[in-house]
Image (cartoon, rainbow, N blue to C red; front, side):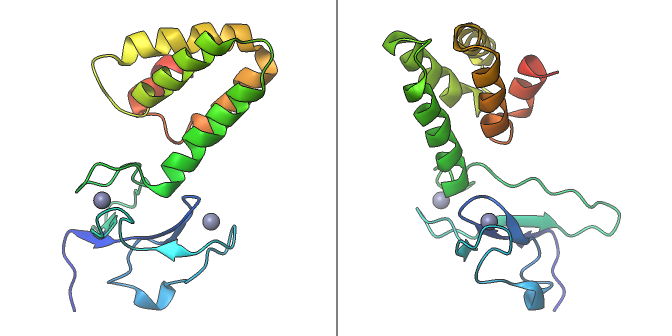
Length: 158
Ligand SMILES: [Zn+2]
Ligand SMILES: [Zn+2]
């Protein structure tokens, strides 16, 4: 069966891609992730729409794991987990206070999307990073780099 356009992807809870062409190459499906052992999924847990997979084009091999469902707009579990990890880390830092944590949480939510508020969010994020210190800032970078939008990444970590 020929598959045109986007295929359906199989991705684990933590965002590792098990198979980006589940229709074209079903033999490559994995019930569990080979990297982290969690169960894989091919549909959005919130609305059950298939997760967009790779685009079938023999000349292009580029696939970015989606952060949000294209049907319901809910963040996928891997997006949620990373945002939660960042907020947990913020909760442990003594160098920042509750209003910083609040500001950080709000800025992270904006920085995952490309909204007009992204520049303001980036300034807020950097303000909190300056207070958090170098080690914490690099931990935040590692956690968040995959969930932030391309624009956010270019502003924060060019
Ligand atoms: Zn995994
Ligand atoms: Zn959905």
